[in-house]
Amino acid sequence: MKKYVILSAVLFGILSNACAKKESTISPAKQDPEVATNDVTSPKLEEVFADSTYQLTGVAVSPEGRVFTNYPYWLDKHSYSLVEVKDGKPVPYPNAEWNSFKKGGNGTDKFVCVQAVVADENGYLWVVDAAGIGLGPVYKNSNKVIKIKLADNSIERIYKFPESVAGNDSYINDIRIDNTNGFAYMTSSSTGGVVVLNTKTGDSRFVLHDSKTVLSDPAYHFTFNGKEFSKADGSIPKINSDGIALTPDKEWLYYKPLTDDKLYRVSTALLRDFSTPLKTINDKVEDLGHFVTTDGMEFDKEGNLYVGDLEKSSILKITPDLKMHTLLTDADKLIWPDSYSISADGYLYISISQIQLMPWFNNNVNKTQKPYKLLRLKL
Image (cartoon, rainbow, N blue to C red; front, side):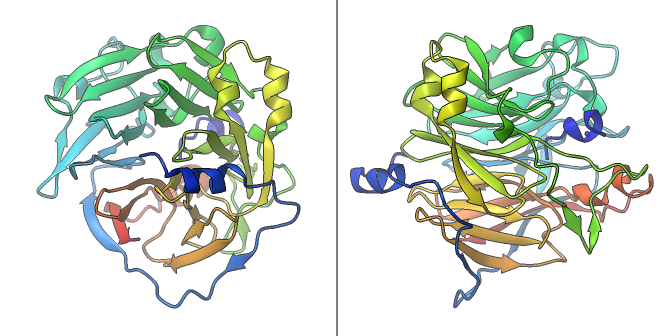
């Protein structure tokens, strides 16, 4: 979940031309999208990795099948931030040094609070270090994005942000990479917004931060087992822009607040041009309608969007015509499906972070069920 707001408010391969045209002509929904729940077959969940050390959030699978996951520094116990799963075991990645951060030290060349990890098609791993320990303020200006070359596990580049883009009160969240045009996009979950990064120049811009579309609808009641999601003190957390996904043709960025069911998209052509007025970007956002309360989101090469229904412990597919299909429901295993990655051999990898069972939301009692897991299903 990527959740600075939980505390501070308490606190998206290129398609063929035919597919790209179909995808880019989707019109904003005028009513709630149709839900198809009568699929003939349901895929089965397979366990990929389990770790009882502490909570994980992200998952990334490289084109060669290497699997990575990350552990944000949220609670007191913390050992490593990013690992590669080898023979079922967590191996600190890219090395032990980058995973050796301790409070009081310099977080510039170490992972502080890694929130997300994504593997691209060009052999690089992108790591989002929000650097918000315990979901608090940025630690010593050390929030950053790290680009790692998988061929030799070396640090290719570290991207930093000015105060106006990702300042002390920012919690940068999930990330999507467009190597075709040389850009990356990240949600900011603190006050809401999208960080646009030119990966060639390192320049960045903060957009949509004054748009209502990045804010969770206060009228939506985010509910588990008949009880509204709330803090130990009874207050209701409203988690802003979180999930993000990039269409296969790289022309549309999809995003949504976490604690409501709305889904939005905006043209990346507008985002890539840093001279585009902020108001123009806000005005051009398309409201796609009501869907589900997902955390992460991921497109496949055909333009299908995979999401999780947190409230119903389900995985769903949204087709380019905006129809939802429930792939499976499993209340025992899908305990807050968090992030997603699609492997070259056609599996959807899912991280299970159990956010709703954390002590923050259960009268300071930790109800999470160890081990924390990575699961997958065949698409």
